Image (tube, rainbow, N blue to C red; front, side, top):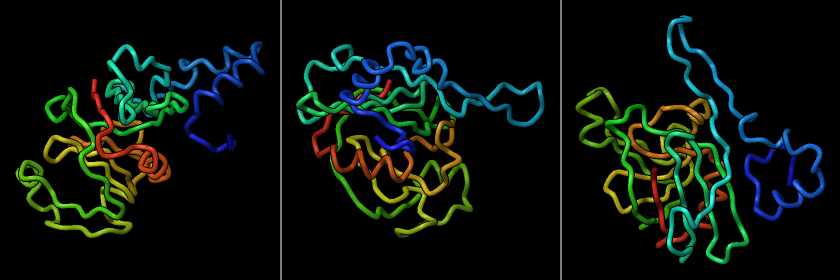
Amino acid sequence: MTSNSRFITRRQFGKALGAASLAVPLLSPALLHAQATIGSETEAPQYVSNAFVTKRWEDHFSNRRNGVILVDTYGRVLHYWSEDGDTYMIFPTSVPVSESLTRRGRTSIVRKLVGPEWRPTPNMLLRDPELPRYVGPGPENPLGTHALYLGWQFYRIHGTNDTRKIGRQASNGCIGLYNEDISTLFDMAKVGTQVLLV
């Protein structure tokens, strides 16, 4: 695992625990929690990164068929388990800006696309009529380099070209990842991968 990696496989995690049993407190997810106060001192803090807590797939899915993705909207992280159980990764995410834009429940990946095009949803245009009607693939695209389309209309797990959004409530409903992370997830996930947002 490289020093700048933002994710860890289950095997790497096990090796790290075994090799550094005295350093286990340093691996504690609670220590990965950071916050930044935006604006005045009286405003509530906005969490930049939260809760890299390992989870068990069995607590959320009955099987790992086609692989499984758990999105923790509170913790602002995405968990991925491969179908064979050899790979478990955790990625930091952006989440919707408000509870009203947050969708929870079960769905699956129905389409995968490299270089996605972006169009605002009807509700986005109601909130901001000045939005562009279309953005093609490239550095200005809000969907970043890759997109995993979910079974719910207008919802995706995608990259972002604005890395300031990761770890924050910053989306209009989708789950955003660093472009490097969505590329990794894109290669492992498939059409039919189970997805649960909690």
